Length: 222
Image (cartoon, rainbow, N blue to C red; front, side, top):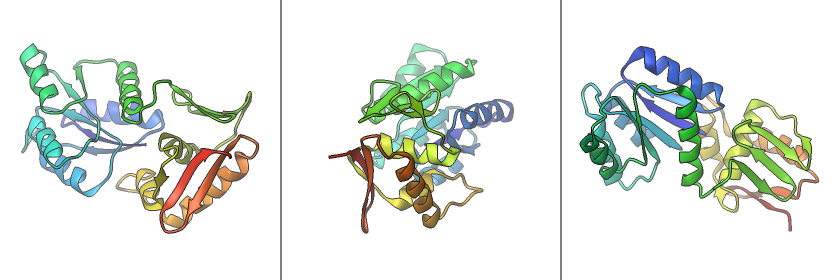
């Protein structure tokens, strides 16, 4: 899944970027409010981690503008502003979570995963369909008791399709969520990953269907 980090502190930003990437997420990092708004209007993200005290445009204004556009992207505020009044302002502006600095990176990752689960209507850290299970913390897929050997990209594609299970996901949307600004994954590459997943999911009770002109649909085998 693809995350936008909006943080102007270079030391903290580097630490968060590395931790979130190591947890298996794709991350774009912006350092001021104008850059953040440009990213949010030009790219699709699964969640945003947003500092408030940003150069050029305050984080709260970025958040308010995001919600005015009707975007429902989950937003976690990361800030040193610890008064009740500031927390209320952030939540009333449309934030979904609020984490005070300094924070432990383990807590940040736990909150991020919880935020994404809520956004996709999933209560458990382990998604199960048919005989397939996917542990979002260990990032391990299994069929029954047998772990699947998947590449990092295959895991990312599977997680995206599982988070949208029962709904069609466009090929272009998958490609966009697999890459940061400095990378590129074409539609053909997505087709290759899906083809590999289909072979590895045989006997799992789960199928990935191609809906021509629309995208891919992961669902329980009928």
